[in-house]
Image (cartoon, rainbow, N blue to C red):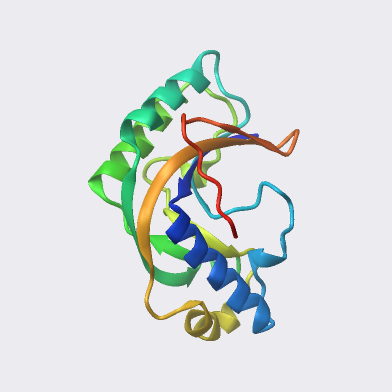
Length: 177
């Protein structure tokens, strides 16, 4: 599996990580418990089995041209009843256009995950995986009543086979969190 992911500005990443920490401290599921070095807040634009030939450079060019993109988060929600706990991302026309352009580049890729494809995609930043809907109200209170804003400033690709990431943009900021 290969993904195309947008990375948060340092301020937005810090705010999401702080929500992860508050959830964990409250005894709720949280991505704060995932200690893999690639774990960081991100917005997944696409997930496919493998990139077609030449796609990685085209994706890099596309993301370099589109970023940074301002972002505002919406409400905390549980997707699909009892799946991920997420902070919904308010889709701007620029974000929707970038998402569509990424899928245009990946049109010939096999194994595209339908939940990321145009028309089905729900843009979000994950807070926890396998979250029970029963704790939704408590999680909203713990995560924060005032969703942060920021920007998507870089892009990367995660390789599920090797569990590594590769940068898709020329500047890929790291957070101190």
